[in-house]
Image 1 (cartoon, rainbow, N blue to C red):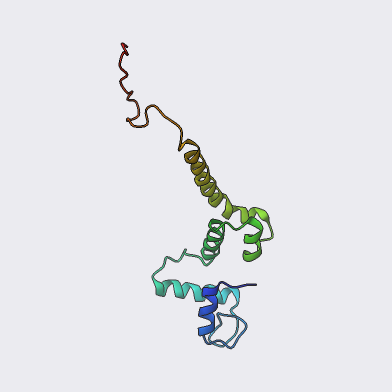
Image 2 (cartoon, helix red, strand yellow):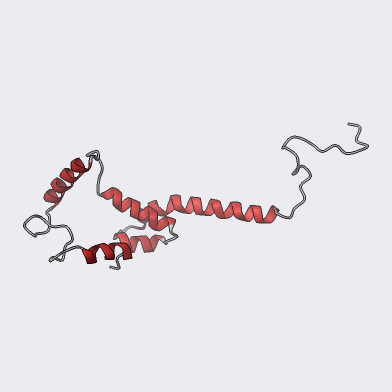
Length: 134
């Protein structure tokens, strides 16, 4: 699994003698319950609410990959999803924003050279044309 260069930099500087990155005080990998206790203590120490969950980091990563333009399958590969439905949760909002921005750019480019009779005026105002008696 490739790692982001920023994480690689941090890991290169960190002292570690294990395959796992976060270990117990005894140098062993955490059990599920042990990691939960570790995270609860870390959240308290950081002043974070206890309902703040590590899974939120995974969701944030999925959103960032989607906003960077990664495909659903790329996100699945990095985050380990087995179902495309899970990965599409991240791409849905990012695609909506990206598609809406692209659509607005296309509209602006298409109308850039059009002559619009009320463009120099405020909407709802019509320019006065000499000889107009209405």
